[in-house]
Image (cartoon, rainbow, N blue to C red):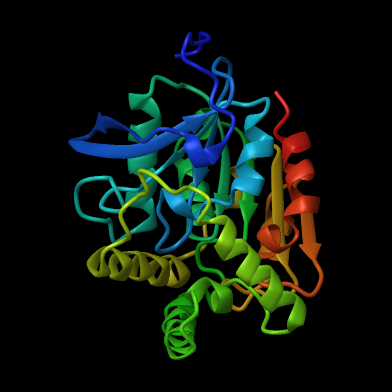
Length: 286
């Protein structure tokens, strides 16, 4: 699937049509936009997220010159099956999904849990990935990675009590700048008004938390085998996946680039999307 398509060019994530493809007995829900042809950028989404959780201010600039693909993991959103309980199984599903679309090489943009899946994918299938973006994430066996579940449940409760979106607590600092950025991010996620994705189920959410806990408690892997150009980004106050783990990734992946945004948390790339999107576009240039 490397040749250009005659389909109309979709330039806005808010209007990208919902599609499905079958792989390994699963119907994967996905969306694509941007010019076809060449190596696509496949986006690996975060804990509890569906297709509707990608920031259009990040997707759209990358899709101006690149073929962008987002997808739901097995058992999440519009994808069938049961959500896996290990990160490695999610990586196998991602490989099957990419193969089903006919691609032998992709760039990967990942956030949070998606970054764990991306690492597992590139370790197992290094030939599949050309460039790698790891944001708000950490390595297998990383310090305090297994505490994500506790932080998540605590912030969901806080959000419920204040009738807020949990992402406002989980992704952003609770100072004035963080609160403003959080509300703006949540509003941007509402820009798609038709054909929205199904929310994640409680069982799938629990399976993902189980996978993250297992990833955090597992033995570290040798990340020196990752030789692909790698961009790592996070905020300086990530409570979900501690910021020191981004620095750990940077030390362990030779030649990687690291960006730490000030006064920001897990969702720093969304709080600073006007600064980060151009960096990502340049890094992912064909």
